[in-house]
Image (tube, rainbow, N blue to C red; front, side, top):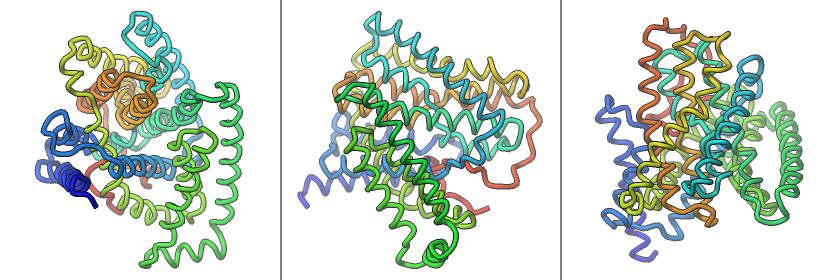
Amino acid sequence: MEEVGATNLIYVGVAIAIAAAIPAVLPRLLLPGAVLEIVLGILIGPQVLGLARPDFVLHFLSDFGLGVLFLMAGFEMSPVELRGRPIRNAMLGWMISVAIAACAVFVLAVGGLAAAPALTALALCTTSIGLLLPVLRDAGLMGPPYGPNVLAAGALGEGAPLFVLPILLAHQGGAGAQALVMVAFAACAVVAVALASRASHGAFAAVLERTMGTSGQLPMRLALCLLILLIMVSERFEIDFVLGAFVAGAVVRAAVPDDEHEAMAVRLDGIGSAFLVPVFFVISGMSLDISALLGDRGALAMVAVYALLMLVVRGAPALLLYGRDLRAEQAAALALHSGTQLALVVAISGLAVGRELMPSVQAASLVAAATVTVLLYPALAARALRSVPAASPAKERPALDMSLLATKPREAE
């Protein structure tokens, strides 16, 4: 390995270790691991200390980390839990978010303040439920009525943009042709999940259970093999690879027997949260155009604008739709939690910059705004919920647990 490449890996390895050590030593700091990793990536990157710069190896690890991130997200989503009034409100709420985002970004685009308007609007329609779940669990908010509603809203905010993103990124054959490809891909995904569900019983299930704890780790190897296969299929049909990774996670969940879901989740956390996913966030920080952002007052002002829009776009539906289901304080907290964004904003803006659809300074503004939402909105939501009696803890681990971005390891219940 070349000396420069080895040095880059050393500094990235140190950065992800420090990102895990800081909250372990300072538990009251309450900074999510993803935020620390982005900040450390900025510090060691070429625009601040210049200790490391993204190269081919780091870009490969970053892309694979992004794939594992959405593999884990797909694994954690259970269709059984996404039903009833919470999911209906979440679907309607996400459509309202799209309408609000489209209007807001149109105004910004007309004023010359935003490029790639469709991708910018989609970034504003996301929710980082993975960052929120540890906070919600610790606060005893996972039970009804609040838990199911925030989980459903977060699931739509995390999952729905993944199906829209490939259409927006289509650059050959037009959006109509890409929409047909997406319909075919979705149909194949449903068939794959159904077949995997049938395989979760009988001889195949017995093999998975027997090898789950062995050194061969057959279930994990099959999951990573499926991840690579679906990523290749996605790129072959001009579908962004994060959707292929997400579907791979859903297929893996269906194939693994129910009583082995927790064991599989722990293993996915081991390979994802310990190394690959942090590498993605560190490299994302290294790639941010921070110098341009800090040198442009307009770009800095847009950080505040985007942070406010993230709250309005995702929070307004909570105030409009949940009056029958939640108290006023809970609806306000749901608005704040729904407006908390990061992972998909980083992914969408990075993909847009990589395809030269969005200037790097706008991407830096979006990511900085998303970081502000993570630091500010959950704390404000906690204040809003202080007068609401805490719900009794859920008896089972929530099926939508996507705490892959948290810095502390998953604990067996």
